[in-house]
View (cartoon, rainbow, N blue to C red):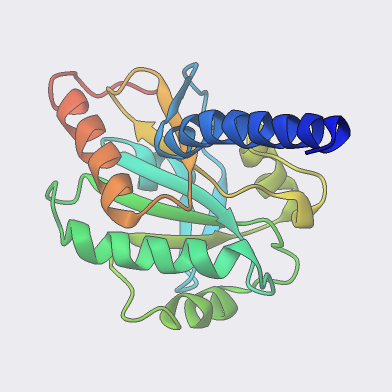
Length: 204
């Protein structure tokens, strides 16, 4: 084999070896959650998929462990996968936690996404869990909330498939991929629920 070809082959083998070493770490990272500092959650008034006005902290977060993601109904890439995940997650949880677990999807396109559109969008993934709340509202209030949650993006097309898991009594919140298998998301919620059960309710 000519020296040049032999050198190229060595480089190729080294590149493959490096990729194989990196890939498992990358895959593991998809299953890991990252702790973020305690969040100060504004009690903004929003509207759920049934047209009911709710206060974000008082009505949805207080006294609960929650999973929060962001979607918009005209999204054709990651949002359908995230919606399917939350729908299946709601069925997996099946009322576990006696009302102390809530799944929350916030529209990053509130000008377009009406309560009716959110309701219709959620039902395409099967019967929606009563513990899954989808929210819209004024753009100012949505932006303020997303900034407080540290998941704001100026352009809806740039929003990430991120889920925040935390709530009262859980200490730091966890930030993970919203595309994790629903069973893994359920494990993260259950861990937070156990942690919260040993702490008194306190506003984050």
